[in-house]
Length: 131
Length: 182
Image 1: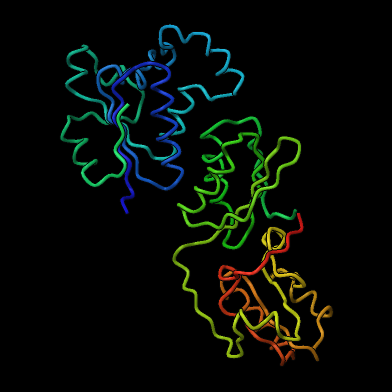
Image 2 (image 1 turned 120 degrees about the horizontal axis):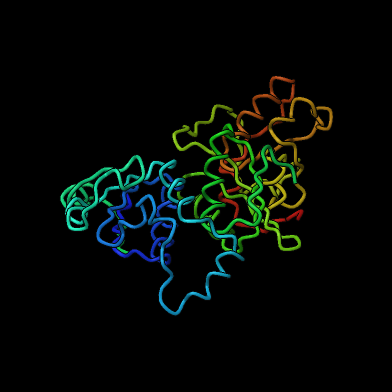
């Protein structure tokens, strides 16, 4: 049985962020080795400012109250927890170049790599997930 | 219900109860029981699945007034299940025999399901409670797998109990009815 979970985060909305980090932290807490590859809008999740202002999907703004009521942790809190649990963050170099971003724009403790870096990790991961 | 450690995860939503449970579990030693209080309804299925995945024993869940109390017993995967005590008895024979069934699992494990008529003395309390046992009567010592009961049987023998038998296999193989104290 594989002990690795590989996740691609390629969308940058608030809902997407919860999908990514809930699965990632739950997997890490279950003693899995977890890596997330952040590409395109997924880079928002680890962007120093962007992670604090992730957009709700259009038309879903009314869920904001539900998030507060359910006492769901904020994304920066989940990001910190994921790192504490040893989840590896890989930022996509190509997307960073396209968007004019450098490592200084992101939180501490991330790796920068290309598709092959992720593929190398994911080759024996099960499941591999894309959000 | 008796537990060695308590974790308050009330008001937290998924995945926080699991993440916190994992962290606290690191402070327990093998065999200790953790009680996790949570209000997240999904935590019942999640805690059981988590324990299964990482190799701990999910003992059970109690629900009172919207609060779920989950009981988990810490186990390590690498422990060798080896038994030493020579006098053993087959699990299938104990209910048709005359002796006392002595269940040495933790209180919570006993509460969530035991053989009717069994007496509960958790392994850790055995030495202090020897006076509750009758040396003249046969004693069938049982636990979950046969490991703790083996140690308990040795302990009883060292205190002069001669009519002691370790029950093999343990409660994990018990197919009969379970009595609950919950």
